[in-house]
Length: 155
Image (cartoon, rainbow, N blue to C red; front, side):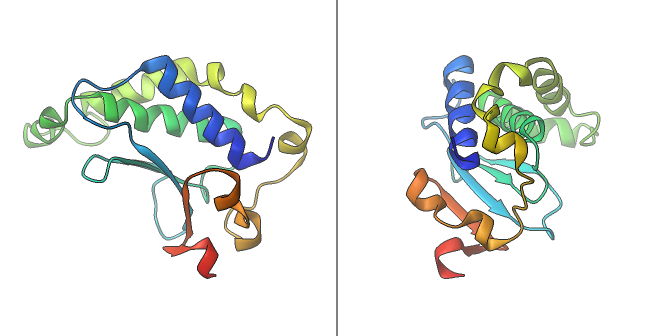
């Protein structure tokens, strides 16, 4: 199984395990990108219904799965309280939703790593910041892939 197929399969397993959000009409799309300047490894964008995974920082199966779970937890959480907690004085480190997402990711990540355990994945150093590493991804799975904001097909 190719690394990107492994990520997509792990995301499908995560979605099936945790189910759909009570607070959103759509299951978020998965977007993979590689951008050293973007300082986060993942993000849930509720406005666009997307979970983004920054492959520059997600170079191991553990990092990929933990980030996917963490961001999926944000999709499951009620969004109206997300900003309220910040207004109440919480920081990213003390925010109850961030703490919950991190705890679930730490607890459950090994449940979803099976798609990564192939000879190819385990013996390859994944250099996601190089466009050739992301070549042909659009043909492998139905996700958008960008490098530093540029779609891979336009590089």
